[in-house]
Amino acid sequence: MHRIAAQPLDVLRTRTSAKWRLYPADVLPLPVAEMDYPLPEPVAAALHAAVDRSDTGYAAGSGPIAEAFAPFALERFGWEVDPARVTSTGDVAMGLVEVLRRVTSPGDRVVVTPPIYPPFFDIVTEASAAVVEVPMTGGIDAGWALDLDGIDRAFAAGAKAMLLCNPHNPIGLVPSRDELAALAEIAARHGATIVSDEVHGPLSQPDSVYTPFLNVSDAAREFGVTVTAGTKAFNLAGLKAAMIVTASERGDAVRRGMPYEVEWRMSQFGSIASIAAFREGGFWLDGVLASLDDNRRLLAELLADELPGVRYRMPQASYLAWLDFSALGWGDDPAAYALEHAKVALGVGPQFGATAGRGHVRLNFACTPEVLAEAITRLADAR
Image (cartoon, rainbow, N blue to C red; front, side):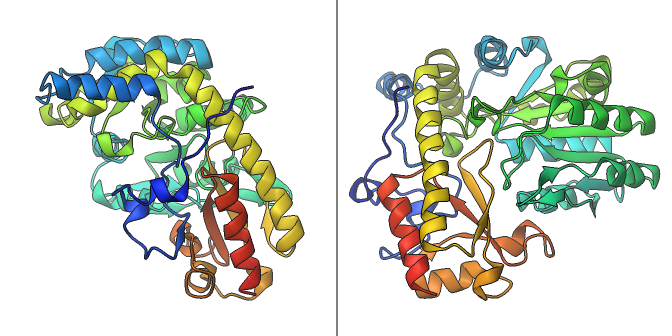
């Protein structure tokens, strides 16, 4: 399998994105979900061509990106997406908020499953709803799973929706088809909506089968709405392009009820880049997945050798590692200690859940092996 090499630090430090501007130059920045790989050549070429023709107006709606995404989803995931059932928007978080606004009323409760992507908490409140936490079960040693009984109880108690992270950020879990089918049945029984963030789906490793929620069952299609994008898989987050996807009349009503402006928040460059990525970026994506596979395994070796007290379960998807630093005695927020004493920036565990994230950090391993090794050495030296 071919591999895509991450760019070296001297090149990366010329970038002006958040990952490379939020910390001093002596810090290795590994918290922000940006990859250190160069853009796919077809994407870069498409963007250069757009600049050359001064093609910087408004994106032409949902149609072009939906038509490019549908064959990509079918080929890679066996997911039949109807382009007519896709509404574009600026990013996944925007899409999640707009869906929640359509399927809840102010004050309604929405289930989230910590440890979870921190903006999920804000997304719920931005939609004028209230967070209900149903933590993941299991853990780093036993393996993670959705607490289906707990979710059932939350819906029975009146929760109207759930934010599903499929695959799950930060733990890298790819839920099984059976698990997702059971979740869909629970939602159907209570008339609740599963709003599924699937932006990390294309970053699932080949040894883990990512199942799009809308591909699971009739119940999932009826009671599910998916929000996804190519932005994580192809490193396009700053270009602002995402899709809200439905597969039933109930779901279509959610999209149709959105304000006119939701569709037009997608940027022209986001549309152009995403279309090129979906149509021509598969070879590059396969190479990135191979490099990420190397790095998730390298991380396990480095931790065993240099930080054996740190607990880690190799993620099935994404380029994010959820690490338990509790044994090091670095407190509830070990990322603060790591930044001060090791000059390594990591994701702040308690932001992913006040209880579930205590003593944990999130580490981005979409970097060169040398940067990853240097980060672990610095952390080990800071003990």
